Amino acid sequence: MERWESNYRDLARYRQWHGNCDVPRRYGPYPTLGRWVRKQRNEFGRGRVSDERYERLREIGFWGPRGALLLHLRRHPAV
Image (cartoon, rainbow, N blue to C red; front, side, top):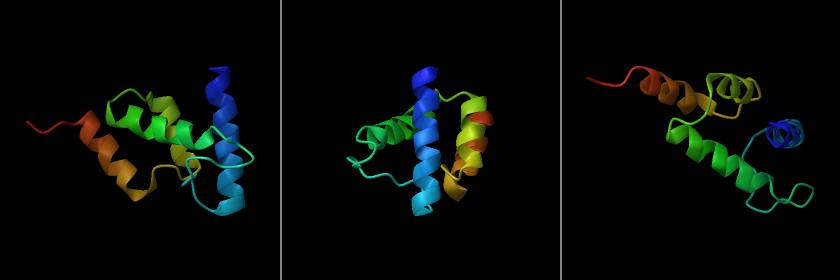
């Protein structure tokens, strides 16, 4: 959990500086942050992001408008 928190704080700083969460694969001040961001999106797609982490990432604008739809579909799959 400590590593996740550290990456989350770095992402929040990146968002504050750049106005988005689209971190390049290799970003100078935080060289592994881009990989972590990609991993969060992949894990969400596989249903492996907890609701708490989803909400925290949502609060800083990580998911964008598509994220709410994806979460809804994850929670309420089509019959």
